[in-house]
Structures are given as C-alpha cells and as structure tokens.
Image (cartoon, rainbow, N blue to C red; front, side, top):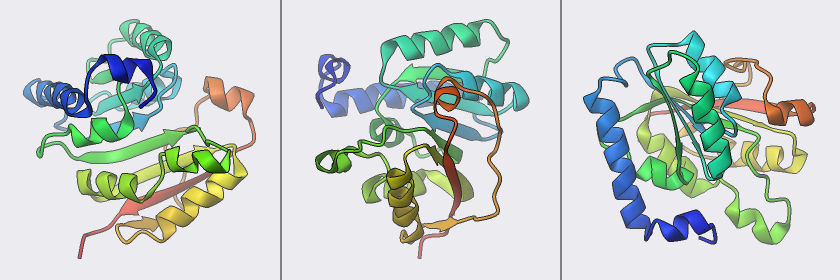
Length: 202
C-alpha cells in the first residue's frame, strides 16, 4: 500500500500480528462480553463516542488510517469514562484478519467511506466481495452492516454488491442505529444509507 504508515509498520503479516495482540488484550480484559461494534473509517470519533456513551458495556472499536484523526478521537475518549471504547490506526481488512477466533462482530459501521470516484480507483473501494466475505466470517448471524455515503454512484455500487452477496441480506426498513452529527455529515448533509444482516453460510 502507498500509505507511509503502512510501509513503516512492515509487511501485512506483521501488522496483522500486532492487531491480533490488540484483540487478544480486549478479550483478556473482558471488554467484548456484551458484543462488539466496529466503525471502519472512524474519522475524529464523533459518532462512535456518542454511540459508546449509549452502550457503555459494549466494546466499540474505531479504526482510521490518518494519524491526526485517531489522535483526536482518543483525546475525545479520554475526556469521558468509556473504558470499552477503543480507537486505533489500522487498515480495515487487516483489522478484520487480525481478529482471534473468539472475536465476533455484532455491528459494523461504514460512515462516509472514501468513494474513490475515478473508475480506475474503484478497486480501492472498501465494499467489495473480498471485504464482504471477510466481514461475514467474523459477524454473528443476524449481525448488522450499516453503510452511509453522500456519493450516489458509490451508494448504488455498494448496495448492489451487498444485495448480490450470499452471506448478506438487505434490511430495507432498518433504521440507522444512532443519528448524531459528525464532521463529514455536517459538510455532506445529503446522504443515503442502507443496512444488511449477516446470514448463515450454506
């Protein structure tokens, strides 16, 4: 990957090993006993912090690739008594691959992910078959995937990917889990959302 952070941290296998330690520590501390919510691309942590305040017994993990965002999110966390809220710098697929077998996800939030609008960059979009496969493998049956974007074409793309995937089922009537102002939502007021649930593998 081109991101300088990822290059400095070594090969993908080394990074995944470090992330496995993170998940093991969460389990050892008993933080995941009441479920796990994962936000990929957590930005400054506005949304997940507000969500964690409503669900103080649930492990809430936010990941982002930009250092300043993660630092700001952690400062926000430190001002509140939320021991089960964690922010870290990690790539989405590596964070999922680093999960130990005991870790299962109840909810995954994708809030304004990078749409990579140019066609030649579509392969970089997070919502693809490989991601949906990996996420389904780590999600409890009935667990949720929530997606929101201001980019109409990416919304259509993601909706189609999920609707055609054997391990996910769209939930047209599912409400967004928490409406809370965030930096991106304030500057991108027009958006579309969908939810899906993980289904049993055949």
